[in-house]
Amino acid sequence: MQDSVKCVLEFYRELGFESLPLNYSNIKGSNKLRVASNELKDEKEPEDPSPVTRYSLPDKEDALRALREDIGDCRRCKLSKGRTHLVFGEGDANARIMFIGEAPGREEDVQGRPFVGDAGRLLTKLIEKMGLKRTDVYIANIIKCRPPMNRDPLDDEMATCFPFLDRQIEAIAPQIIVSLGKISTYTLLGIKGPLSSFSISRTRGKFHEYKGIPVMPTFHPAYLLRNPKDKWLTWDDAQAVLKKLSNNYK
Ligand code: URA
Image 1 (cartoon, protein in one colour):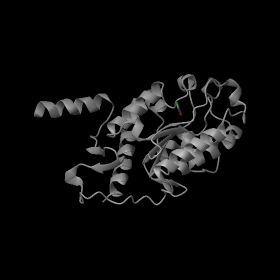
Image 2 (image 1 turned 30 degrees about the vertical axis):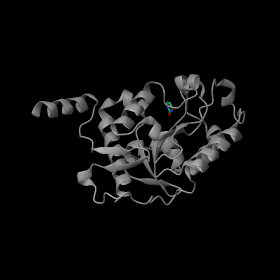
Image 3 (image 1 turned 180 degrees about the vertical axis):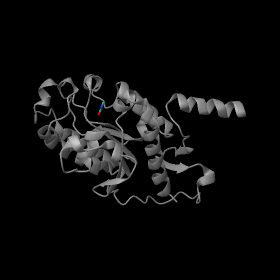
Image 4 (image 1 turned 135 degrees about the vertical axis):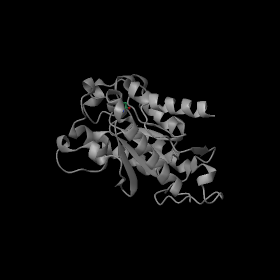
């Protein structure tokens, strides 16, 4: 017993975590999260408390399909010239959690899917440590085409593309958004002032809001690859997200 506890602790330390995850399980089929039974006060299947859910699942899927059609073979900004694939986003249209990154990188541009490179593999690990699968959540970016040499998206590119993400959020109506990194957080929170003076370190870890939806800012997985010592802070943020979701079902 002691050996197995030691093994688990070492495993988490190898991943860069300094605190243990809470034990959450995913209720199959309903895409609802609940805490381990000893933490759950009411075992009855609760009503969906989300104040932002406006569509049923087929409506959400229809809304996303319609949005994809509207975007079409987008030529609205100059990024279209250099892209291989537009990266629309993927996941469960009925997801409770939506992860929003910055922009597709090289691997995402090639595959047409969000977060499938090195940073994506770390994001997938985080999602799995949260007791979920990638297919349980929805993953998208502030902009849908890769900027050349992975430079930061420009204001005009974000202004052109953001209304599509806004519609995507409205269609999915997640209970929580996790904004990954500085640009995603700055954009979603509508921060005034220059990006250069915005600090993700000071903003992460507390809930903010986008159109009434709680937003948890955290570090971008690419940053965590360069600064693995900060992984435990992101794990704290992930636990706060799980706790908030579980509170919705108490
Ligand atoms: N970084 C992002 O912000 N988004 C991706 O999809 C991949 C890397």
